Amino acid sequence: MNKIHIARNSIQETLIVPLYGRKICSEKFPDLYSDPSANQLCNSLDYDFSELERKKNSLLYEFGALEAAMRQLDFIWEIKKYLEKYPYATIVNLGCGLDETGKFCDNGLCKFVNIDFPDVISLRNKLIPSGPREVNMSCDLKNFCWMNKLNNKDGIILFAAGVFHYFKRSEVEYLLLELSKKFKSACIIFDTVGKFGIKLVKTTLKNVNISNVNGLFYLDNPKRELNFSTNIKVSSRPYMLGYYNMKCKNIKIYHRILAKFCDSILKMNIVKIDFI
Image (spheres, one colour):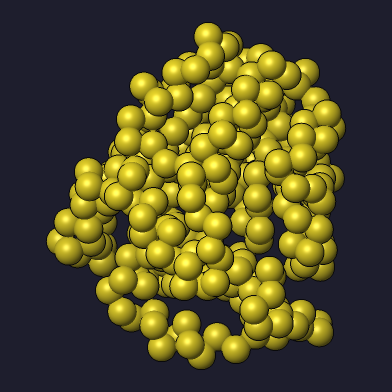
């Protein structure tokens, strides 16, 4: 098979870091996390991984990969819980990139919708064949036309991994309000950081020459700050240690210390909103 070329400084290149992180986490922490498709996808790309290879054994990069894995495990837990009540539900991956979280939850009955920018969906179509119950949509999440294409007859659970950090607070609130109007009994899950955590996000964006970083979405207290509608019910759990205790082979004490720091100081959370 011909490898797919990924150009430097392209939108598609932004998908490489989380993909490679999942690959590394599978190799370093197999008792906690397994994603064989990540390795297969990396092998399908014409891309120079040498810089990432040099970084992979550093503590910060290793922990960053662990963060991505824990988020995926948290989402899988919530999605499977929702499917217990709505086995035929549609799982909607907002800002999907090359992520395949939904497929880890496949009960043979549910459906999948993956939404991202056209360039991203074009790459995804080349690398990840869609299944018979799966649809890929090219759309800007801030253009709500994608909502009109979703069928809520059997339930809907949406998730956004590392997406809303780059939205304005007003944009996230507007999106949530629109979802609450259209999809009763649905729910959405997403990750958030607090005020201190968003400062680190802003620094990262400025380092890649993205300057319009004022007003980005963060939450110090999800239940209180998202209490803007009677149509939503908000709950949250700590991101790193709220679902799994991370007590397994190759997880060191410093990993757990960093995890507690992220949960308590950076206020990293997994937020779940039920639309009622």
